[in-house]
Image (cartoon, rainbow, N blue to C red; front, side, top):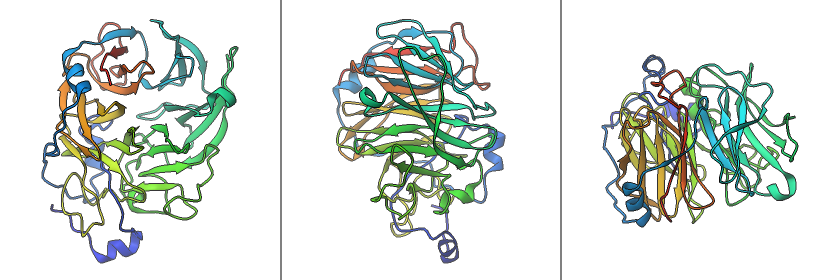
Length: 388
């Protein structure tokens, strides 16, 4: 690795010795000009392709042999897909609309517009998450960009919902034209996790006093959990460039996909309090005595630019925006195997990937986001039978 971390940098950032996570670049949600503008002296490790571990998995072979069916067409930059206990799906469009797809349905209808959304660049209405106690509280969470910040809100859905009255969960996250992050996920611990981008300001990622360039963990109301690694802080892991994929496996481990800058995209196994190296490391390299954690999987930025991530059984699925493909990654415990690419170039840019209640996988295209080639019916949501 060509990266050098000095004692001075450590003193300035107050970085603890912890775990790791990565980032992704080359298109995905990074235009080439934006990547060049955020170099900030970051050194890059040689591209290593993928982790060496392999794991056989039935779901992987099924995904490799089946073709997806179309669930809905005519969407505009769908960013997140989540399921309600009823089996209905909610889809966020970056412009601010939430669409509903009824269980067994083949059409996305407008549910409501989220107020306050300011779509610009990579910002807008981004991730959604459904409360783990939805049957009682009817709450849906959303990550969005406003005129002044990125924030997380929540709102109640009822059978007659036509307008949304969001209540604040967390405000004041820095916003920009790029690297807003935006993925939300509830963990098996009932806490809310959020991938927050560095907004192109690379210094934020190693500054533990800032919430950008991090994965955050919070109570459902936004409060700081008492068992977080840094007292009084929502920071769960640091050293991230732009995390847009969060997925928990059946053992409760958190996996994250991340945009790299010029050479290397990543999938990381997230550890409590871990430091994933950005902007001092891109890809695999010297961990500086365990200060940083190497990614489990790496790609060139042309191959991936990973956004959404989902796990079905023991297989991780990662969306490729710039790579225009779906990555199928077998998992064996805490190790990731060799990824296989599916549907390369067939559907264009792929952003959201979600495990459906029936064990299938839903994924969405993102060809209307200003960086893709729009095809008839775009944007669309597709369903892939993958088994478990």
